[in-house]
Image 1 (spheres, rainbow, N blue to C red):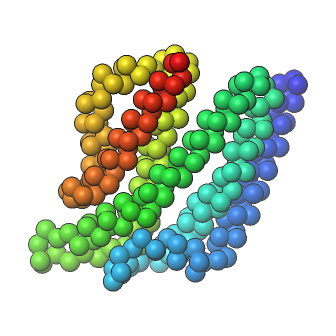
Image 2 (image 1 turned 30 degrees about the horizontal axis):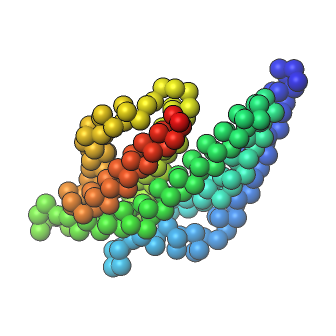
Image 3 (image 1 turned 90 degrees about the vertical axis):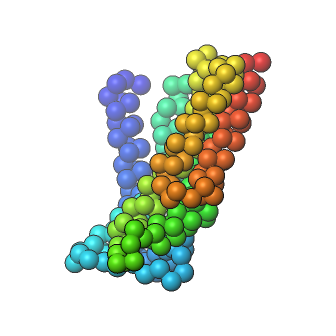
Length: 230
């Protein structure tokens, strides 16, 4: 294929992705009650959210529907990306790319699920009840709740990509298992700091909920790198 033919192919696949994402977002927008039942599930019982801007609820509805639509069609998006680059790869490279994309996608979903079901409920409960003084009452806005849920989910999903990143670095010969073992203590410190940044609750239990899974992923990454080196 010529350069312009590649460009036409890329444009066609981007158009497919945009149409699918738009259709999924519209569908999610139409099922408002079900959509926000999922979004509000981690919220502690008894916590009430408020809205202080005239257009904020409608804009939040649109934003959440867009992200939900992207999540729904994400397998299709990954398929289109892979289908575009696959013809230019050798058979071995296609298998490696398929493993990296598939494994990375599943790990990302695992990180999001861990945050949604365990980490975020603890964090939002602590922060929602925390007070510097009895004279200052917490009033949580809808936008702050949605933003925190989205940011924490994204960060946890990205952190769970650690094994895939280490696997790719080991494949190209940049990362060694001996290096990861040597700097294990440094990694623990970095992991704890990241955990504290993600969940600034000051609660050791919540910090452990974030740090321990990431540390286990670090140990899993060492085993993966060892296997690549064999």
